[in-house]
Image (cartoon, rainbow, N blue to C red; front, side):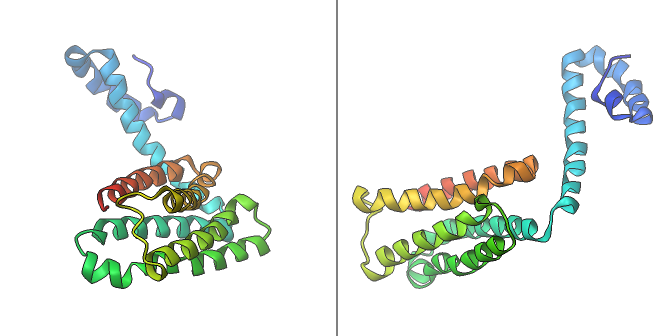
Length: 198
């Protein structure tokens, strides 16, 4: 019998069931492809096992994780509707994204008082600097720096935005590789929508 990841995981019955099908499938696909299929199945099972990490987090870490994902999802929605609803939404309510810096900095203060590492609370304070700068540029001075791109304003704007995102993204790595991976996908989606919305 071919050794599969199930041998190491202790799934004896599952392995025997897969083994029964393996004889027929091996004749069609070959060893390597079958093992890849099994690895995909194991990966799905590992995803479910990985989610059990949530019970090991303390309340402050859970707050950080939930807020990080809420913020990224709001950005995705914002970037998705910014261009098609520019007059009805962006001009009137686009500032809402900047206003999220208020709960963000409150959460950062809570994390500080709870004794969390600076990597957890840095994002909120970077966010408030980014939001104040962005609000002034977009709604007070009303400078159109995006198209055409004006480096003197655009570069610090982009740096502050990316720094905010990075400090919500990077701390997820030691918490959970799964969460970090999901956040990576969300970040890429947001980035594509952001670029397309200009």
